[in-house]
Image 1 (cartoon, rainbow, N blue to C red):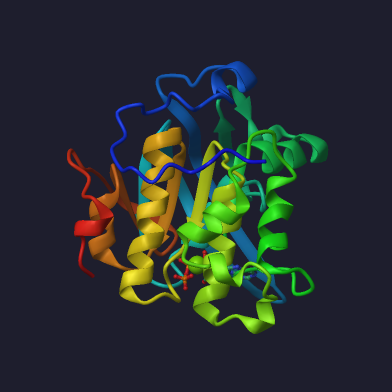
Image 2: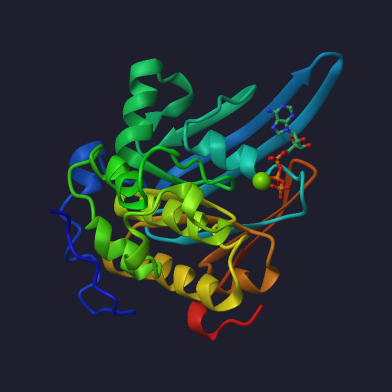
Amino acid sequence: MGRPVNGNIGNPNTGSLNTRSSSTRNGGARNGIISSFRDVTKEYTTGEVVVQALRGVTFDVYQGEILVILGPSGSGKSTLLNILGGLDIPTSGTITFRNAEVTRFNESELTRYRRYSVGFIFQSYNLLPDLTAKENVDLARDLVDDPLDSLEVLRKVGLADRADHFPSQLSGGEQQRVAIARGVAKNPELLLCDEPTGALDFETGRHVLKLLKDINTEFRRTIVLITHNAPLAAMGNRVLRMRSGKITDIQHNATPADPERIDW
Ligand SMILES: Nc1ncnc2c1ncn2[C@@H]1O[C@H](COP(=O)(O)OP(=O)(O)OP(=O)(O)O)[C@@H](O)[C@H]1O
Ligand SMILES: [Mg+2]
């Protein structure tokens, strides 16, 4: 049985439920930094063509923040997120997570990192077609020590009555919400979200962003969120802008907006 999800935004008990303290598991965050990129590049070679997806990217992710990543299509956002999540390996540069250097991890260390420390909400949903919505969510929960309750998270994304449906019986937006529920239910220290509202209408997207904000506020989870919707940047503590594989700007936002008050 997973931990319930409390729906209150701005809960004054922030962090009190964070029993899986990352500082005990992985060593403390240095200067509040959970992860760092230093001069990271990524080249993809396909036949004769070399694409420089990342051209020397340096930034930090702070413990407990929402970091929004904005940038045009093809600017390297997903590449950056995949590398941050240990799904892809950079061509050069250094990545750290807490006191460990991810770029020096061997296969089993990378697997542990992906399993225990990060969670993904993918741009393509990656649901298993032979499992129901609830089973897809359960699968992620089974990997970790203190997941959230699957049905409750499905209820939060508005799919309580679709828990026993298979992906082929769900609309594109509903599949995206199952993928969101899966990422959230795992309750990882670092939740990486690639366009989580891309296939959703405005109101449903808003519910999803509120859920992410709840996770951030109540469980002090760190969230990196890619979006094409510039107005959504207002919900981030910081906004990182990318163009052609480079970071063009990192902006600090003193008063992040409540997702329920943002129009886009
Ligand atoms: N596996 C791959 N092989 C070859 N090129 C790739 C691969 N993955 C990404 N690229 C290229 O790297 C560049 C950055 O891609 P990426 O997916 O990171 O962009 P993005 O900013 O996420 O775009 P979008 O907003 O469209 O999702 C693009 O030019 C893309 O074509
Ligand atoms: Mg992308």
